[in-house]
Length: 187
Image (tube, rainbow, N blue to C red; front, side):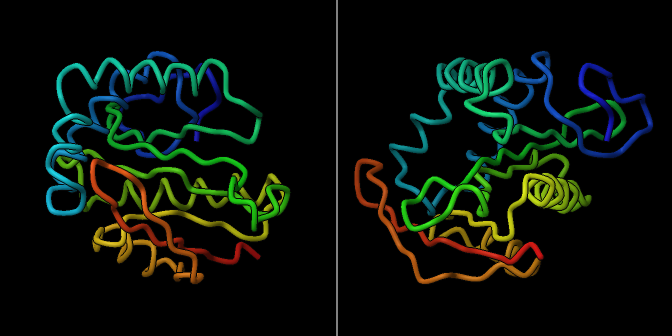
């Protein structure tokens, strides 16, 4: 990882904290990853709305706020970098569910890799960096809500030792979409 405000030199592959100048790439990766990875996972109309050209500006605004004014020092946006190019990102924070202790449980909010850079270890590096930060913050457990039909992310997290903890939810995306919460021990 490189320090805040320092660009990763070309040739370096790794993960670092996101800078304000990264948010355009993060928003574009989010839209590309959702377009490619979420057909059949979330309703078509919701996916179209969340990946429309206008959506990129909304995501850019949200990620700008996450970088410039996070709600706490434990809210972080990380980016994967390869040869000076942002290839993916992950966001994490203290757990927000009422049955979780935010002092000891962190939440992986999102982890997305640009489809053009998939299967190159960027997701694994982002997950490892997220876990490292959560441990540094004193977390002993991590949770993540994933779409029940997202076999790719569930499979990825399962291969890293995450498992369902029994919590289920539905999110309204024009129709109810099932979610499942995964967890893992960080000790």
